[in-house]
Length: 162
Image 1 (cartoon, rainbow, N blue to C red):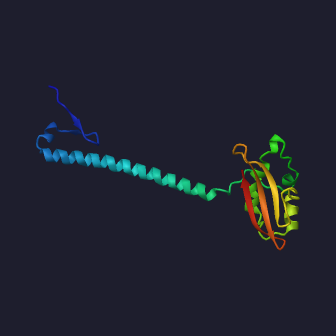
Image 2 (image 1 turned 90 degrees about the vertical axis):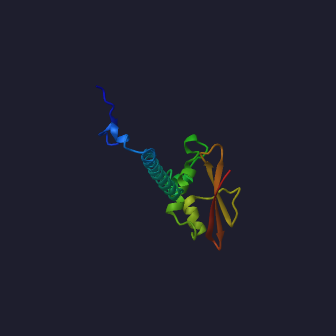
């Protein structure tokens, strides 16, 4: 004689007569419990995934601007031939290192010239030095570093792209 065997969640056989003693409401309640358990389990997994995603996003925001493409080296900056393909983005790549490792605000004009070399003469004034950065790795955009002085001291730095 063949007997139908029903397995529960733990894979243990249940007596087929088990269901005969249950009312229809009891069976619906058991089904709701199973569905609720499955839904809660999915929600827990979704919550874990979202929490990890949020943590990664916050870390990325915290590191934005801190990761350098290339370490700033004064001599390389000064002597860069930005017309050569290998050097086209070198100053852009050094910008994060320059901003993170040198306190430019408060430096004198002479300190800036010693660090970065003479500024581009065609766009610089007594109160503002401008350094061409080359291509920015975002298409054909180029940029510049602008350093503003008051009383011979740096008061502001800006990086322009466009």
